[in-house]
Image 1 (cartoon, rainbow, N blue to C red):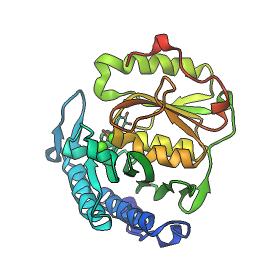
Image 2 (tube, helix red, strand yellow):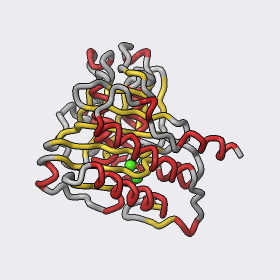
Image 3 (cartoon, helix red, strand yellow):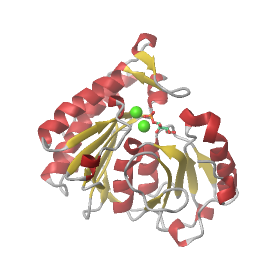
Length: 286
Ligand code: IPD
Ligand code: CA
Ligand code: CA
């Protein structure tokens, strides 16, 4: 019953949120709402789940359905754009993706949560222009919260402009990602770094969706997010939203992102950016 009530909002066209949006952004928001509707109406069973490469890495038929839906919608919206989606298994960033427009889509970010009815998963859509984030849209259909940004136009959550927090690290929450699919090689390092940040902040959080973690920092709820290894579809949309909200995103060595594929990620607010926030190199195992 509770689920039915939540679904009532998921099919909104986004009209009330789009006053400050370009037509292109408005259409992408509408596609994200459609993806969210598929997510909240799904009840994944064991037979809907398939193992992927790597440790504890699964895909459900709903990840595939959402991706198919977004491929169809986004191709209609911007036919000339390339399309890179997680469930296509396109790990290599082809040179043509760096020219003109390319959609980079994670149909369901937080699949482990989704499979367990944990109600914290999002759909994440980035549009790159000449290889850099130009539009980012992230929709959490369980909370009916949509985050979006377009280069140079600011970042918004459900129609309200958002900014990162001015607070120092010592007064901030830190969220971490565990790089769960690479646990044998690098997850240990994520926890060591977490311990290092715990001593310098209020506390540590772990959501299970990197895209959502980037929305939380963009909207001033957390002060820093890091994960030792993420794919482009995990962070491209969130990077656009975060930067438009005044935040900074780099790899964990503080280097500028190339937006070409896998990378470690370190995102901070305007407040934390004023400090020396990089983790010590001896704790990193990328
Ligand atoms: C995962 C989530 C998770 C992060 C993993 C990602 P998926 O994406 O974002 O929070 O820790 O590194 O791969 O597999 O649920 O789309
Ligand atoms: Ca993901
Ligand atoms: Ca995914």
